[in-house]
Amino acid sequence: MDGEYATRTPPIGNKPKAHIGAIRLRQGVTVGPRCIQEVQVGCSVKGVHLVRERPVRMSRRKVLLHNAIVEFSPDTPRSLYLTNIGDGPVHLTKEYVVGTATAYNGPLHVVADEGGPRAVLTVEMDTPSKTDEEAETSRRAEEGVDEGQPPPHPPDKTYPKPEVHWEGVPDALRGDVDDLLEDYRTLWAGQLGKVDVTPHRIEVTSGARPRRAQPYRASHASREVIAKEVQRQRDLGVIEPSSAEWAFPMVLVPKPDGTMRFCVDYQKLNEVTVRDGYPLPRMDDCIDFLGDAKVFSTLDCNSGYWQIPVADEDRDKTTFVCHEGAYCYIRLPFGLSNAPATFQRAIDMILGGLK
View (spheres, helix red, strand yellow):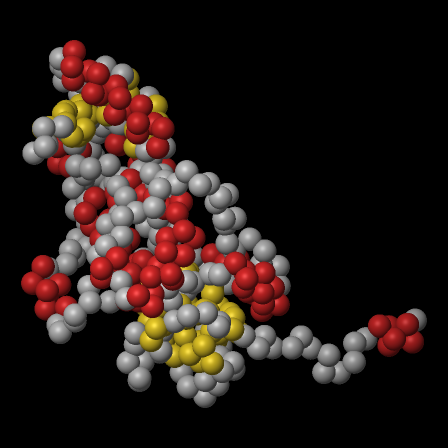
């Protein structure tokens, strides 16, 4: 029996080899709830690499690593960003592996200072010829990770391309820009995305009772507008039927161009809502931040509020009533007192590494 056990004992030193592309923390760090934290990392690889998070293990801890392209050197620390999407602090120990580094040979433009982490911006992030190679390297760097990235959208030639002002694009980059638009043509299909980093929550004051109101009267013409808008929001997955105790009337507000804006009167709800003190950016600070920049980029979200989900336990509080029935919002509606704070928090989490 002793001899049998002896033959099964693995030889001394037979330990799994360290992942060559593992990105490790240089010191322990605690990331506060719903906060972005800059961390110093190290990696044994050398050269320009694509940084990817460990989707399985990091998601269990509710911590996200901001993907980037970084020039690594074995003895040089680099700065990356972690986002805690949970409601409690997360402590990560020294040498904890937060992500993996995959060799990158695509086109790039350096946008950081010499002393910075050397993050680079590429005009063609994922080329089809490198998808399999990157996926295989990621699997070698983290066992069992085969579900980190969602499957790509099926090709559909009906997706329109956005209008491009080509006079502002250098001739050398026009082909790359056109390829980039083609790769992400599904973004202009009119569908809504989803930002899961910070769902909207509605905390009401202690002792507040559900508020309920009857729908406002509407003319025949207004009813047609309301019916079409309710159907559109249902098709987009923004609202769903509700039987909640809370209920608020909706109203149509004229826009400057003569069309009608669909609004919900949340005054009674806002009166009992605990205010979210998350700071909104000051316009004068935004202008000062531009400094001596000569190239500017603007991003406009497609129905930005509707890309942020409402927490499951708070959806009933968003219920509105009209002649079409009662519906609650699955995505963040307009008119809530804390909606701007939630949206700004989401933007800061997404773009925190670019500030």
